[in-house]
Length: 432
Image (tube, rainbow, N blue to C red; front, side, top):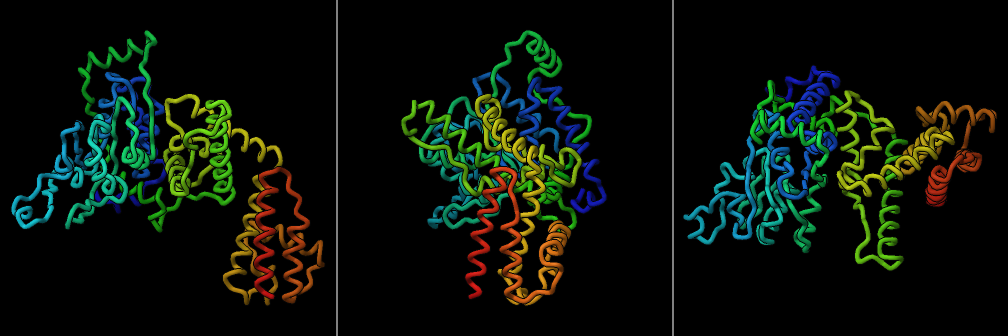
């Protein structure tokens, strides 16, 4: 099926397909609901997932069962080892080209030529091979010697029993946006359910009654990454700001926990969230909304961002994120903070209009503002200035007065107001 065949599908219908897949995987791989949801988010966003656990916990089974749910996609599989060279992943070298001094791989059937990949014991690979994988994992390009080939690769699930720390492995870890630690299940009832599945399927992935076409996954991926001009999942500005507040506070809590761990001394490395990872969290928000059949992100969706900022399965990290989320959410909900953020961010949009086109200062500001600022702004304008028409100087006074009259109800809103005051000052100064 082509991607255009899914244009008539509602978000609810798409959501049902992925919920069916999640339910089937969870029947086969017992007590892994959270990791399965995280894995589906990785697939929808086109990112990679790293699974860490002790041996025999079922990492390979989980990966294989996930990939079995999709039709029309090839899976590259490899068990990493120290002796392997890049041609294990990229295909054998073309001997004739090598005689001419050119490195060219025959990529047919390689990781470059497949949509999915499972790399078992990834950190058993040598650093030379791991370095060669970086561009394929991140840019989806094979760049070796004179060969520069786009990769069909959509998502890699890698497994490891341990983490090996080096400059290269840190770069590899950065390519895996989603990470999970899978702990052994010791509860007798869970062990019984696992045994039931083993007796039925012998440790192999179970064939599902129906599969999701890979074309549907690609279609949904285009939607959640904002590449589909026809179908959008809306994230309101105040929710983007809310998510950034939560992420920043989580970063603070993680670094505070690190300092406590080192008894107040400076940790050897701080916890850092890159702007790239923070930007990708918006894609995850859209994926979470779509998995729930919605075309709009809600505040509750922000609570699932620990899928990329924490390691699923590590309670301390997940709880810190939940604390950051609940603290900021409570502050904003208790003080009408979301509404205030909405108004200030709409005011910021107005400032951006004026910054890009200074001639707009010669028009009444009431004609420039749009929803959601328009109604509140016009009401305030009538109350404060009596609805008089405006010169440039009057417009400047109106903008300054609007922020001066705005009373923040919580610290998060106060911080935004202060940032807008600086932005407004810089804008007005540039007009002199």
